[in-house]
Amino acid sequence: MWVEYFAKVFGKTSVAVPPQYTHPDRSECRTQVKKSLSTRTDRDSHCNRVLDRDKNTLRNIVMKGLRTVIWA
Image (cartoon, rainbow, N blue to C red; front, side):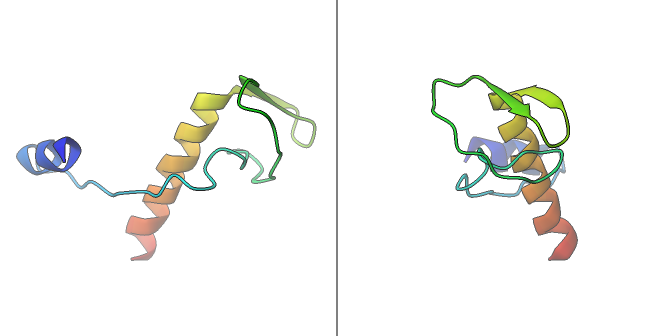
């Protein structure tokens, strides 16, 4: 609710993104890797990238939101 409120106040668009399947996808190459919650970094042998788990999830959420707005 707060995000929607402040988006309206500042004339911005907010998009609700369901959090399902945002963590296992790699933001760079879109491959899926299963890992435990205690694993804090994503090591991708496919594209040779190391990324913090939370940053990877954030990138995936942003991309899902952009696809929702662009393709809507």
